[in-house]
Amino acid sequence: MDLLVVGSGFFGLTVAERAAASGRKVTVIDRRDHIGGNAYSEHEPQTGIEVHRYGAHLFHTSNPAVWEYANRFTTFTNYVHRVFTTHDGVVFPMPINLGTINQFFGAAYSPAEARALVHRLAGEFDERSAQNLEEKAIALIGRPLYEAFIRNYTAKQWQTDPRKLPADVISRLPVRYTYDSRYFDDTWEGLPADGYTAWLERMVDHPNIDVRLRTDFFDETQPLHRRATLGRLPIVYTGPIDRYFDFAEGVLSWRTLDFEQEVHDVADFQGTSVMNYADAEAPFTRIHEFKHFHPERADRYPRDRTVIMREYSRFASRDDEPYYPVNTPSDRAGLLAYRELARGEDGVFFGGRLGTYQYLDMHMAIGSALSMWNNRLT
Ligand code: FDA
Image (cartoon, rainbow, N blue to C red; front, side):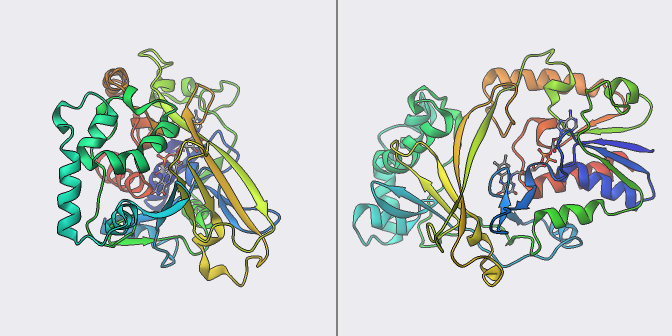
């Protein structure tokens, strides 16, 4: 074996695939019982509908190298992501755009009029001196839009009153002064035509790649554990960086999600793939309805049944799946200390969202894995 990759998410698999293609023998271990990390999807057994087990995954990128690389393993549908939100019994398009503003204020503002209105409402606070998330959000979009669309949604995401959250949790709140309600504005966007798992399986389908599931790097009863491999061969580590160093510099904090999946005997539950719930009364943040991700599969999916998933958000404890870095000042200090430790760890390459404590979209995980391969591992 020439290389050990810990974690089979997009970061680990991209490095493994590149290494195998260049003739190296690679072993990939993952503690889960499937490859793919959080991008993994599976067919819900009663309906055959593809479900993203760890939350909705939409592929989008403006990076030509990543787009070309992804297309070696899958074709993409022409799915374009749009999100709606329910507030006070009315459905609005998101992110906030001219359609949202005009519907909310019952008006027909031109782009310039809407911009002037938001600018005037935002004058209540100064962005630079905002003391908390609420003040910062009001300084960005004004109180009425904040209270309708951001306040309770944010409180549910963080399980914390936005007046108690630091201002730097948000850097910007996008407002579009057109009717363009596309969620992403990248050059390329779509969903893998045969699903995520088929794409991920094609990446490891190489005689030089050996995949071992249910294998934890820190479990000393399995042969490829940390002490047995460190210093013997290069290791690409994509698990949590604080866990690698036995939490010596403290535990980095994450938010996690809980999912509640249901099969309903209706053709269509909500008419769209993602509906946010902006108000406090609904305890969940959003509902996903998976059949809407693949309208081109209408003849294969059941006409009278559908799968939905409610999403709830909360702070993660050490046993929960880490999903989004919280990034408090003490997390940032801890991360700097861990980066220093990582620099001293000869032969170990830390990557991916857990290994670098950063939220990475799939295209970013693939892009940074390609550059690690090109610049540090070849
Ligand atoms: P990832 O977390 O996927 O993989 C890490 C792997 O390491 C896991 O399989 C884990 O089991 C394994 N591991 C950890 N510790 C280990 C140990 N000790 N031993 C062995 N294995 C270990 N992106 C996007 O582009 N569009 C989207 O819509 C979304 N949506 C989205 C929703 C949610 C809820 C989340 C959390 C994330 C997204 N993403 C996304 C981001 C996407 O999931 C992300 O880019 C990839 O997961 C990053 O891949 P990684 O390989 O870095 O990590």
